[in-house]
Every structure is written in structure tokens, then in C-alpha cells.
Image (cartoon, rainbow, N blue to C red):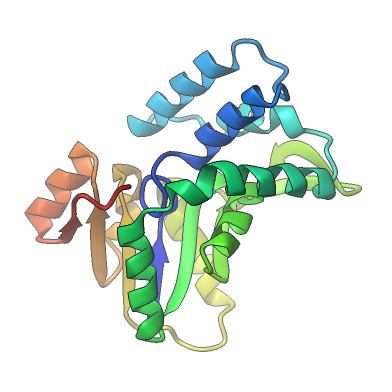
Length: 218
């Protein structure tokens, strides 16, 4: 059995990449004086399904481009402790615990950079996670992204690639998400669950009779 979770606005309240940009601005680490305005516009594009992922990731990675893995990890760990841990949704932590009790395997798939997704998953006690692949050269972050881009239909493709290298069949699948951007994957699992869904996802969930979890916020 496999329980898959989206990250932003599902397991945590808020968008981790958006929150990280705000954190970097507060720390005086963002070089773009219009970063807040630009990030807000990118978030609106994501919510409407019109996000240019490559452009957004170039913007998102700009402040830490050229950093070593040690530098990135240090700042991200501080961000998780200060910003993310207080935003973990209690109801969704309970869902993680329920799946653990059933001995289901847990996986997070997110359209956020893996430099954030992997350590946040670790903080949540989830051993497997997939985010947007970020590229390194000589242990320095290049600011570019790789082939794994789990956004919209890319999330389903990332899951298929991950499943192809697993050594044992995982059987029945669940997927928890708040966003219509995740409909390609929600349509394919055995148990799609809409968590505080946006209007488009809510309409689809109601029509299809999917489980809807409302109020799963802080």
C-alpha cells in the first residue's frame, strides 16, 4: 500500500517555496528588491494553473545560486525550524500516523524544489520524497533544474519513474492534495483525497464522489 501526499497547503499550511522566499527576504539574503511582488504573481499563476515552472524556479533559486550544499542545508534547516514546523497541519499529521499504523509506505510528491522538499519530508518523518530536481556543479547550486519536474502531469510521470525502480509491488494507492494542478495524478490513484480543495478540485471531487477533507488546517 502506498500513501502519496502533496506538500504545500496539504501537509503544511501555506506554500513552502513562497514562504522560503519571504524568509530569505527577511534574512536580507534576496538580491531582488521586487522579490515579494514577483513571488506573489508567480503564486497566483500557480493557483490558476498557468505557472511557467522554469521561469519560477530560476527566480526561486536566484538567492541561493552558487551556494554549497552545506550553506543551502544550513539555511533551509533554520527555515524549517522557524517557519515550517509551526505550519504542519495536525489533521494531516494524524493521516500520516494512520497510514504508518497500517504499515503503508509514505511518499511526498511536490512541485517545489527538492532542496526544500527532501528536508521537510525528513522533518515530517516521511522517508521518500520527490521534488523538482535542482542541479549542482562542483557541489554548488547552479540555479537550473533537471528533468524531474513533478508539476501537473509531471507529477504522475515522476511517480511512474519512482515506481519503476521499487523492488516490491505497492498495491493500493492514496493521494492527498489541495490543488486542481494535481488532477492528473488524482485521477489515477485508487483513493483520491481532496484536502481543503480549491474550487476546481472541489467540483471534480464532488462529481466523482472522492473523499473531501475540509478544515485540515492549523
